[in-house]
Amino acid sequence: MKITFMGAGSTVFARNVIGDCMCTEALRDSVFALYDIDATRLEESRTILEAMRETKGGYGKIECYLGVEQRKDALRGANFVVDAIQVGLYDPCTIIDFEVPKKYGLRQTIGDTLGIGGIMRALRTIPVLKDFADDMAEVCPDALFLNYTNPMAMLSGYMQRYTPINTVGLCHSVQSCTEDLLRDLGMEDKLEGRKELIAGINHMGWLLEIKDKNGVDLYPEIKSRVDAYLADPEKKNKVRMDYIKHFGYYCTESSEHNAEYNMFYIKSKYPELIDRYNIPLDEYPRRCVNQIEGWKKEYQEMLEKGVKEHNRSNEYASHIMESIVTGNPYKIGGNVLNTGHLITNLPADACVEVPCLVDGYGVHPCHVGALPVQCAAMNMTNINVQLLTIEAAATLKKEHIYQAAMLDPHTGSELDIDTIKKMVDDLIEAHGDFLPKYH
Image (cartoon, rainbow, N blue to C red):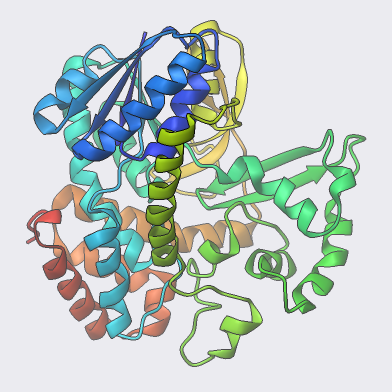
């Protein structure tokens, strides 16, 4: 069996996913093909994973493939392809995503999923994914593409609609959603045996039901604790708690993400909201700088002291692969096309995040039905942007980039149409060859 990791220079994530596979009897004898366009990062990943492979019994084999000219060989014959690329990296592209809009008075927190930052990230990533898909159609047409790259719904949605590659989008936020909520509200005693139903879109999947091990609905107690949480100036997860108060439901992704997915919290006319909700503006650039420095230090420590013990995580990738290989069923929250209206009040061409059953025949999305109307409405404000961005990538029409930005809840609530178009033009120019030519 062959497992190919695209963007293996994302060393920490590659270590976690491939390390999980090395911990799994059904997967550990695989060929692990590492692909990247950065020779230094690729070698760092190879060094760490070879050391980890030895500590896990020496099973399997690691192969490295560098650059576009070796990409097809990296993919050839793969059973599973894991995608964790970042086109344009922090420097220059993430810096551009934040600094150009800032000149127009538009502030962001993360900028990788929605908003103007998410739009630009999708537009520079989709052409690369198209190339991956073209190669896969030739050399591994039956492989399952496991996409971890953001913006999740835009990238997965493009792959699912415009390529023949079997694709599922995977995020970390579904697994940790209810645990974060219950711990934040001091309800740790309800964690064991809890039952949950989550559905919506990536980073805005709604916790529709949460019950304790005895089947008792936990939402009444959760809602009774929200006001006290919001009143505490030290608490950080306030946007999601505010969702509970005003929309009735908690959502999957962090408050720093959700602060920029709507028109409510980051408003230049209401600067006091930033402190009230503890919103960390420019958070993602800070994280990038810290992660780059932290990785240099961690890599040196590994070279000197050896690889840390790796235990299998709750990351979905290895569990999906194991389920398909062994036939043993497994449940995930997956990002899939809303074919057959899995969520009945969202569009069929939207990429939705729903419970999925995995078995020897692959990934099977589950029918959810209708979301509460206010939750579907919130999702639609994001889906509008996602669909228009995908349309821009598919048609290369600049007007669809303008429209995506105009309909983005945060951008449209802060800037007028002429300013939005000027900002988009500046972003396109600043990105240079990282973007295709639009007409």
